[in-house]
Image 1 (cartoon, rainbow, N blue to C red):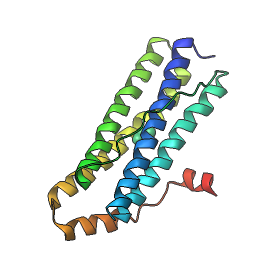
Image 2 (image 1 turned 90 degrees about the vertical axis):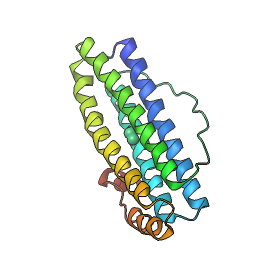
Image 3 (image 1 turned 60 degrees about the horizontal axis):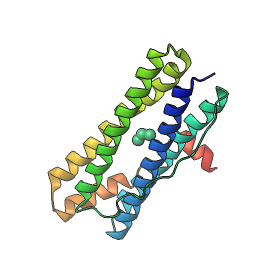
Length: 172
Ligand code: FEO
């Protein structure tokens, strides 16, 4: 059974993941708007990943006999100054998400809630990967600057992204 503070914290994390999903979808729409289809595709897969993260927590709360309560999600930004700014916004959100996950792990430790502590380790590791990937793309976009050929090549590369197996399975 989850403690009330832990249940609240996990519900807040569902909200963080879904707000992140919403932002990624807005980023996908931005890249569609500026005709960078590869980046739009990458952002859309990331949206799907964030929804999957939220659903992992949704299921975990129920597995622990807890109660999920949904919250309103604020409208995300819709415009960014450049592709680099758009990916920098994604990186900032991932860093914020990592902090929230860190707080959840700290709460699990304080409460000696070993199940939640173990469950959250997947998220801790996932954040390392997500921050590293977003940072790498920001750096590449910074390197090419306004060069259209460079941006085109990055767009082509990001268009190759394939969904992870668990998302492929969900979408059948
Ligand atoms: Fe669910 Fe991008 O972290």
